[in-house]
Image (cartoon, rainbow, N blue to C red; front, top):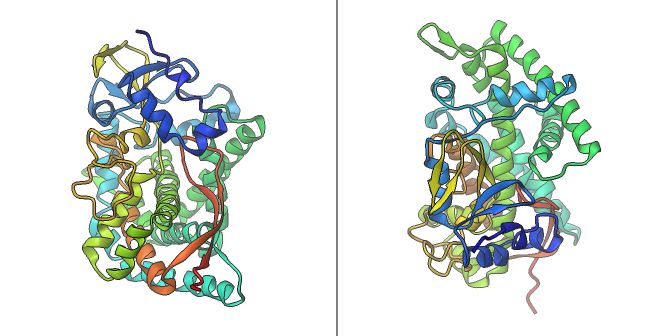
Length: 405
């Protein structure tokens, strides 16, 4: 039987965008891999198939430049990034960037992240004190990773709004069917963002600091180093990918936690348990993943779950579907903060495993514990979900204290 995944997964259907999981399950029941006529690509619906796509070396990230001079900066921001490169270029870039983006460098940020969360929560508490609500996204989840990345890169704190707006404009290009207005905004954002990082990197070259951008400027492997465009593309990627995962992973996961009373009770009773908080964050990432689609291109004919993907064809790992696959996760549609093992692939797998995963995990662990310790039991007053499929999250998530009778 020939299966068209578009019959199960219409990405322009608001119901699918709002809750894709029943649609994933329906597709999974008939095919682990299927052609999607709407996307013009094969898609996976199982954990095994998605994992195979992420790890098979015959499937690569092959960036297709957008035509026209107006896309020049956008194109090289992607072509010279780690995410859209394959070996040997990917190997070289990741080696150079990893020397600067070490786990030790990230762990040294922990005290500062604690300090930043405390300041943001003070502002949230002031809103609750007046009998109102606070927005877990705009007041907390969004500013925190931007502040952290800005400090890592050595960017002025006052520029955090610019960084966030540029990132939001660029990532809208990863959704199906962007509007003419969104296309223009992405072109402008790519140009302005690249120019900003270029100027900042030039200053760091002349005046080195202790920040990540200085480390990237100085990154060397023998006589090799990052080219000017590779350095800029890396800095832009770290902001875009790094904070999008943290914001959406936190918002989606917090909404799920607050909607599952037994899970919330367990966490509130053991909020100082480091192992539980780490496990909670992994479940937040699994249950409603921040990234739902990661595309690869076949450099040769390749078989995935019994389906031959021909050379030149694209195939997308549906990470959200993989992370709810009952063949891998017991009670996959249940939010369980103590889940063990938890073999989610929210950060990908293989050579393109997210280089910023340690930072995203650290931010989420610190921020969710701080929120729960400060306010205890909260409830969702109003939720405004994004109308996006690939990068899944909330525009806003208004929270209020639970009032006991």
